[in-house]
Image (cartoon, rainbow, N blue to C red):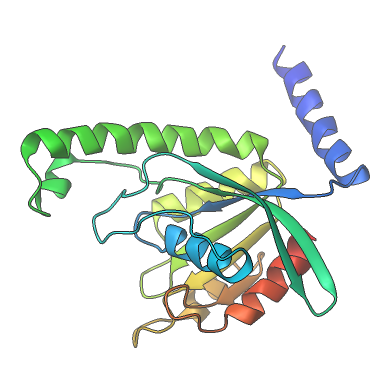
Length: 211
């Protein structure tokens, strides 16, 4: 049965590329507070005038995946229509004590931790329904984390096109070069989703990568 499932997945992947879709379903992934929802809001604001959802300095503010359909990006004659999925932050460990550091009650912290854990599971499941991934990483932090390596491996195993966003280049200690060195097999685009720095280059890369 395992062999049959693997063969079916392999041919499903080939089917996607031989019969190109009119629009691509793209997931925005990354660890907590890397700037996933900020990037989703930036894309939607620039191309639809809308936003995806609220952002917060509290980790795991997004605890359920959110889908926005039919976002059209046009750059230099290239265009792509995306269904964008903003996913919960991925983590290998979620401890309710971390939420209590933000002055949440123990009851609220435990509820958030439970929802965040469920969100991680949901985000992983979404990978089976996507056509590509925008992986957002904080360019101020060490890229060689367990969660970054794990999610890149999961995306590669599924054969999904991947574009890494080296976010937060507006901060003085940002180093997109570290991300490029860590994952040389994938395109890396430096940007600031918050400030909009290099965002046009990111849109061009999105249109080329997923168009």
